[in-house]
Amino acid sequence: MDMIDFADFLKLDIRAGTVIDAQPFPEARKPAIKLWVNFGAPLGVKKSSAQITDHYTPEGLVGHKVMAVVNFPPRQIGPMLSEVLVLGFPDADGKIVLAAPQGEVPDGSRLA
Image (cartoon, rainbow, N blue to C red; front, side, top):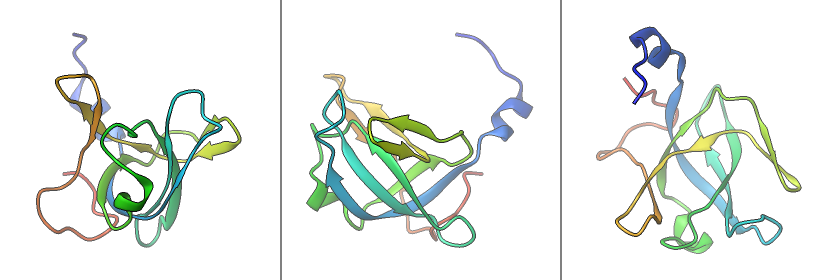
């Protein structure tokens, strides 16, 4: 594992947000869901593609609190421009489980 300086960690802007819309993403090479996440002011709503179809359905994600890196450059995923990287961890089978705050935090809260 490569060690990084604490200053490198501080460059990441990780925020909490609420999924306000989620749609199937059949155009993606690997099964994925398109997410629209509200990060509150001043960031607003950002789009993301997430390969989370093993544990989640689009209908079940609306209202779900997530964490995302919001300061990576946008990335083209098929026909969609993904603006943030939603975070998750692989379970014992390698299927992604979303990372989320344990308590209620306002949209846009920054990981401290």
